[in-house]
Length: 299
Ligand code: UDP
Ligand code: MN
Image (cartoon, rainbow, N blue to C red; front, side, top):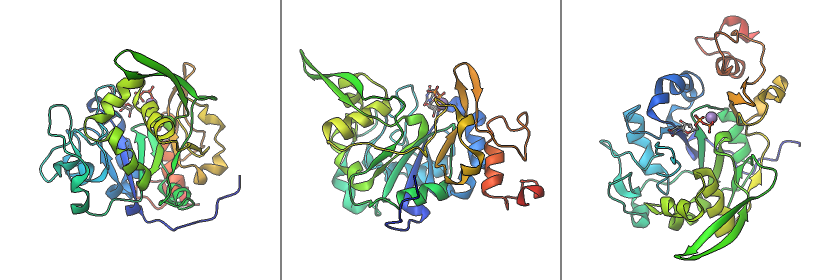
């Protein structure tokens, strides 16, 4: 559809972006992000594992999610919660075995950003487009924004007590496409998501982390997912993203889809061999003044 009118102009510091990653991908995936979109928005990014980029993680991570997201991590990674490095603020809880305290310290903290976004380490974030999109929603309302990967609500079984279950269904935004949550909604989620609670909430429906977010937001809080086609995971055919509309897309990805390599289609400036994810080419397209972009990319 047509671009939504801007409700509030946003600056990069208004949006917190968490990048979920795990040690084995620091070289293979994170370096590419650092050289591309994160280089332009370093202050906004954080890391999910404690070993990589320690200063950034220490500066931003535990202080910034209003709840620990140890289980945006179901496969052994951890988003924010695990980090307890020097300079970190231990109030938001922590990873396995660490202290878990929650929100009372809230008022002692620097103001929380207006928006919290999650992406995977195979996502390119077009931060200008992200700010434009989020700026078209009032951050004071409850907003959960992303793209579902299913065409219907997911059916789950909710464990309500020791020996009682009931069916529950809800929409959820695919973690691999990235999603965003307004500050007010993030705070409302904290009874189910802060400290160690995210894990036990996930346990109640036995589904992955992104489904658990949908469960908390839609099923428990009654806030509907707002679908947005500008988020892209590699579970869709990325060749179908029109090259002429790359400026508007909020996230991109790369990977495998139906057993084939899947990436966005963009002509240059780098070959597919040199730039299989196409992220370098996309980055030069969006930021042609980047030092390592061929000068021809400007014209
Ligand atoms: N990941 C993780 N721990 C793991 C494997 C993956 O935290 O053991 C993260 C990974 O860094 C990425 C996300 O989970 O941010 C999705 O992983 P991947 O892209 O490999 O899988 P898929 O997209 O096929 O689900
Ligand atoms: Mn992936």
